[in-house]
Picture (tube, rainbow, N blue to C red):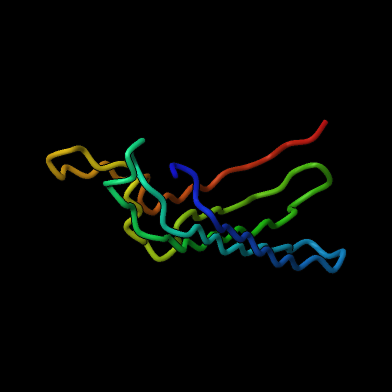
Amino acid sequence: MQTPKHGLNLSLAYEDGGPLSARAQVRYASGQYDDDLNTRKLDSIVTFDARADYRVAKGVTLFTDIRNLFDAKVVSAVTEDGLETLAQRRFWRVGVTVDF
């Protein structure tokens, strides 16, 4: 089966109406096979994401967003000779959003 049998996304958010808000998410996917014959099994995965936003003015928000916070090794494919393709490792971005 090339789709995980089990998956879970759990998100927590903090918003109190002030300038700061935060979100955290954990994602789980059970093991799955990489091929049609079910011979190359991929391990289950758990990743964590986090984001914080700070409103500096009406319509202007600074943010930082981290995906795969703990830099988990996520194998997305395995070739017949065992070569692994990895999903994106830890990814961090910082930016500004402007609403108008």
